Image (cartoon, rainbow, N blue to C red; front, side, top):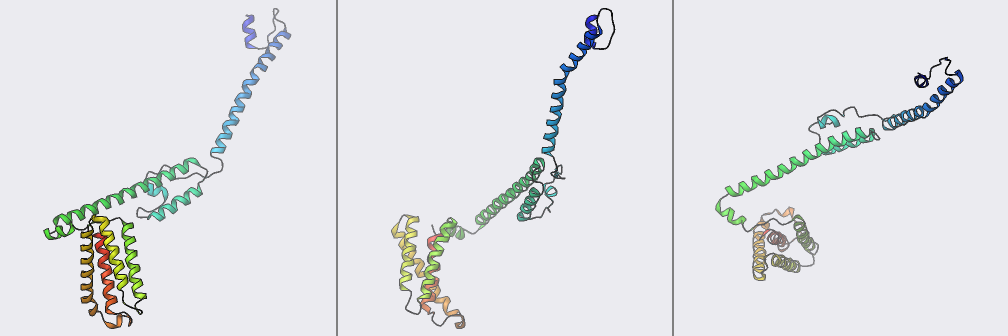
Length: 258
């Protein structure tokens, strides 16, 4: 009975236990519970501070549960990539600081970016398939002609195009002083050099280069006289205009022929 009274901590008058002892026991129980109350209050304050720092006054994105990425970003299904980028940047700026909102916006943007990449890849594959099918369905003479043609890298095409365009501009600027014989010789040497790099045969490179120059000169001598005279500068001679056509043939032969 005395042990139960000590645990209950209630005010009981008994002949076996003095009232002063009972009050002492009750006070000791209260003081022993104080640390636990302080810990719970500190835990609640920490939790409140964490919640306020996570949410706080930062606005939240209202369309986080929208499944359609177009509707989530607020753009049309036919929107361009520039419009999608602009919507993504605007929403990230508007809801900056709220982690879930930023993750939702970035997730929708990544889905649209990936779908756009897949569409472009499929279109390229379909284009290559259609071209290959057209080549397979072409006549035998066209297939034999295409066997001598190749598609080099774009940087190679632009470098050689710049070289022969420079030769053409140089010939036009010096048209009043003399003929383009020197420029034509330099262009022929460059064509033979590029062909020798490709074929690893100097004889074949010279043959193709001279043939391209002769074909260009022949076609130019036929096409140029058909051009009305009012479209041609007075200082541009037939030799100059024919050399410009020859530059085109030299460029095509050293760039696209195997």
